[in-house]
Image (cartoon, rainbow, N blue to C red):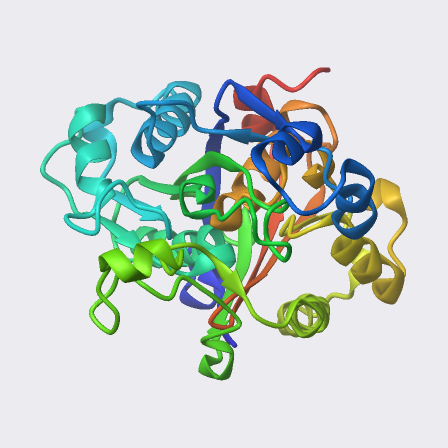
Length: 348
């Protein structure tokens, strides 16, 4: 894993504000059963711990969610749109195969002609975007919007037993700016390991397998997870190893962390990680039962929830942690400051 520590450059990076967006449509397990899911409500809860998730409605898109989350972060930050020097959008469910959905969001926000681009890192997307944002701030950008947005419901086969209950839609954003050295974002680490390339993937729709009538009939354009138990074990092990590696690079241990914000893959996976890491429930943000797996946006949404609901105080160390298909992995250590809490509107 490549770990980036702004302090090594004599720089500081902070999160100035966050935002999130969820579609209004709530889909229950009973709704999925009515759509043809091959699992009962009880089986979905037993296997995944998920009871509800938010899905896009007709005419809505990933870009709409990204725009709403980015607008909220920008409004809370107190900055003008012309003070943002870069927009990074992490997504694996873009509005179109090309161009980048970030370009549409950049224009709708009224940003100057600054770099705006998509990054694809599956469920680790928000951490990858944060890492790039931190590096950009350390090399001269005044403010960077790191956004993660996914609408995996658009690629879901509701009749597929392995994936039908898992995915929700949503977006989260963080406005990243310079800060005092040794505060804010202390370290961000990311890694990829291509041996897991086919662990969770969408077979058709790219250059290797263009979409055809036959592929559509076979639902080759939807998410496939061939070996769920193996993916489960790899994800748990990946979360634990990633946490330990990043914290070792900062001279800390999990016992020094006040709140862990893990990727919300499914409740059973997060609970197993908690047992192995010996983390009590009060030190882990868990919302997957209500929101499902929002892919790369899950940690962004969870971080905003932690800030706005008062789960953390000023000075708290927050560990953002993700593992995803590909394989990808990432972690970020954030020290929460008073100004970020005030911007989030957290209860006193």
